[in-house]
Image 1: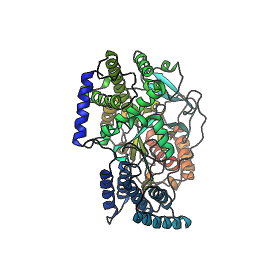
Image 2: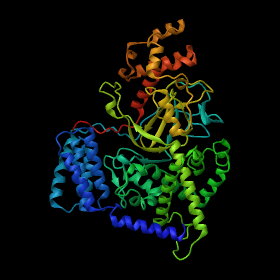
Image 3: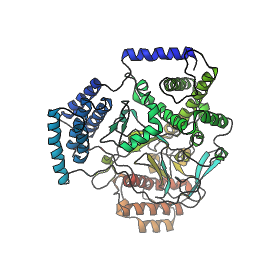
Image 4: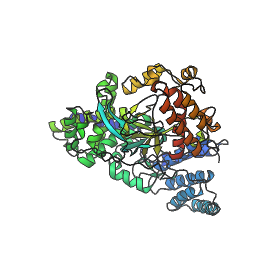
Length: 576
């Protein structure tokens, strides 16, 4: 970066400081957030959303409180009261101990000790709610492939011009098999969830631990806090207050900051010079071809592997490209000014360096490419909240909670279909699991869903996919202009008369458990086995072009069942 650009940027930063837009740890900010939480806490009608907002405000108050300050003790104290209010005495006790270790106030200590006694009494009576945020949830076992340990050996990565890189079955796959179990390369919490979920693994941070320096990261444990610091947060921490300015929507910078994490991790691991050299050589070849990995195989942790993902770099419209370049320039200038990560840069204010300017521009180009890679391959870390199921484990439709963003390179190899045979499941510690929900024959491609739904018209689905992923979907429902409604009209739900053998076997296995609407089916081992068997039977006897009309409802049920059984449990209670 040349001297003129540096001086201009320094002036802009100083102006933001003068306006009070740069947010740092501050007693007044912490107090205001805690007061807002208290106001909600004292309101008469509490529900899940109210509890979530109170928890978020108290955790944000903790994040903004100066280290070892009385404000920090008060924020911990208030959050402990909320956790006890939600019948989590063990979690409440964690915050009580933290507050007691900080406060010098006799009044607050007396209050905390009284609450501590109540927590201990409730714990003794086993009054704590069931802890629904287990770190280790067991998924069905699978044999990993030799090339990609996070991928099962029943699939392989293939490549052709039509589909690019994609995954195909190396043997017949039954519903319920694990295809991929991958820990995200990087994650970042969504803007509105920044103080609810761990910045390092996206787990719900009931007793979140703040960063000691910035006010924009909460961690679920000391382990995650240390991991984040060693991997990337020691660098990003220095610029967070200048990214998430007072007047800025946090969601506007979420995608940018996940790119910053990718870059920081790569530079710390491999060095800036090496990753710029790698990017330059890869940009000269077809990065979607398998030969890209000839040097280091399928090592998902390398910058090369991440950079080889599809970017749609040439599909940017002019205005959008301008925004990406502007965001990249802001982040890189902040990294240049406040960190030593680009120690190749000459930071002297006396002389200019053409080499520095060249490196800055090359890094900006790389950053924009990474941003496009993120846009094309990122997963929204979506959790089905517990209120989707009633006390009989019957599926109830509700909105998914997007806790944050997750980049999982291997999982990105699975292409889209509006009639997917694979479902995404999100597990603790930032892990994504792909499980089959339909039978897949040897040699067939595996598909997941990129966000469309057959309740939408074909034109709507096509428009969404073209705008966001730059391709025209040619799956069976799109080719035949199918929606849930049109499929019901074409094929009556129970008029399965294609084949006498099929009808005979279907009636033999069909029970009242899977009768009526799929949303009313109970989730239990018997119903899951029945749905799997019906899916296999449908594939065995019916022609491929009519399979979706019969199997869609069973695949949907299996997806919900697998998510109920294996997905991270993180719901904030309605009742108190």
